[in-house]
Length: 90
Image (cartoon, rainbow, N blue to C red; front, top):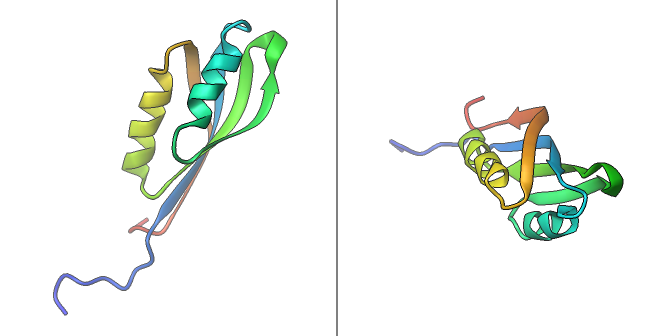
């Protein structure tokens, strides 16, 4: 059948280091926890740092979501630490 694909859908997993001021970190993490595919794994409150993962179905979605995380009020930086992509023509 023309246009059909038997390939499994792809997905992307990224690990991010997010920085905020220590005072703003709890509010920032509340905002980020509400985003689809985001899970917070480690928090260093005194340093204003958190490690989180971002799961998406496509690398293009990941780039847009990372940009959204960087634009979240209170976020000083959000840096990609690890990236894994599977399927979707990869």
